[in-house]
Length: 236
Image (cartoon, rainbow, N blue to C red; front, side, top):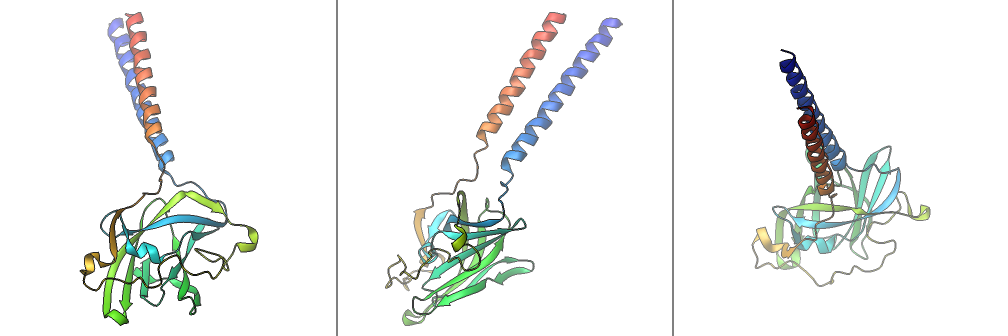
């Protein structure tokens, strides 16, 4: 009878230990996946404009200048982006409380055909879907597109105080011409699904490698099981 009770206690201890390790591993992975906290301030951040359905870089990537400006206040994040060939991009919408809403335009420059827009973002680790409308009257081009913004949290850099705030120009701090060829324009002979997209795969921004956490959890679990096995053998 005593041996049965002792065996039951050992099995209970083993079960409890395994449950503890399982919960501990989940907590480790959850903590690793959580977005890092960013202090209030103004930062620059790199990003790519991706195709709406896959991770290929969209040709629209050439019209959104890099880097973007990231403003963090009271834990809330706002992104400012500068668009060249602004007259071609007649609509730019991002997810809001009730579907997609127009982004806020904070400045325009008709001479350089650019504008700076801003919108709120909740998670820099996940691609942000957006809707744009492109119209080029000179070639009778008129299409809607779905794109995605893939941010690179590892590229975040603090912006000096004199450049911070609402006056910080996303993409650049002066009125230099865009790096994009000024004569570039969508190909009217292509279909809407691919006309504003390239086949170039994106260099996906880093979103935090959690493989080391899984490895640590696996090693911890294996080591504990081995120690429990040795303990059981010695007791027997």
